[in-house]
Structures are given as structure tokens and as C-alpha cells.
Length: 167
Image 1: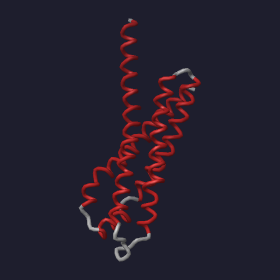
Image 2: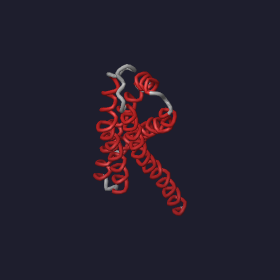
Image 3: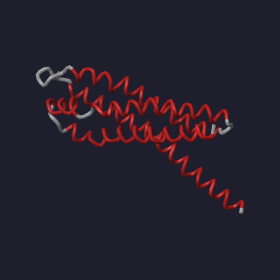
Image 4: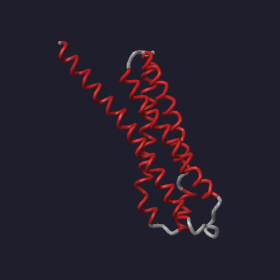
């Protein structure tokens, strides 16, 4: 069971790091996006983000599943602290999925059928929803990333201090 838990930890770390990184890049590009004309923004939306959805979506789902499994196994192993940490990460990743389905997916569906000639007058509202949804996902995935990596750093520090005192 210990080997399985290590694999789940590894998968969870990779997934939450990738989700955080991908969503953060959307936040970092937002000022540039806001400076684009409607036609330019539409071109960017329909050209540059395909890989983001594939990698990000896969990592959100896989990360939530692996963190959830890690939480369950941690409870079964009597490791309540580890279960809490994995549970927080799982909830953060589930949160990013919810934000995607409620915020980004509807915008993506609309934008996919627009052309520069059919761009609606309220296209900025759609852009703002898209950007805000990514900012929320960045916050959620950032919390998950910080909780997970922080717990690993501090648990190693405690383990090292414990072994030092045992000498």
C-alpha cells in the first residue's frame, strides 16, 4: 500500500502543478488579452488554447482522482493529516473542474461559432467571464499546490528533525 500511496502522491503533485501552471499562464496573459480588439481576441481564442484544454482537463480529472484515492488510503492507514491534505487538493481540483464547466466551457462553445463578422457587441463580457474563470481556477489550483508541496516540505523537515533527535 505504501508504494501505491507514493505513486498517487507523485501523480497528484504533477497534476496539481500542471493545472496551476496552465491556469496561471492564462492570468498572466490577461492584460495583453484585454488590449486586443474583438477580432484579434477571437483569433487568439480559436488558435492558441487547444493544448491547454487537453492537458489541463486531463490533469484536473486525474489529479482529483489520485488525490481522492490518496485521501481514502490515508484514512485507512490512520494518517489523518495526510488525508486532510489530499482531501483539500482533491476539492481544489474538483473546484477547477466546476469553474471550467460553469465559466469557461459555455464561453468556449460560444466563441467557437463566432467569426469576426458575427462577433456580438457584448464579446467583452464573454472575455471577462473567461478570464475571471481562469483566475478562480488559478486560485484554487494554487491553494492545492501550496498545501501539497508545503506539507511535503514540512513533513520532511519534521522527519529529519525526528531522526536527528533519535540519535
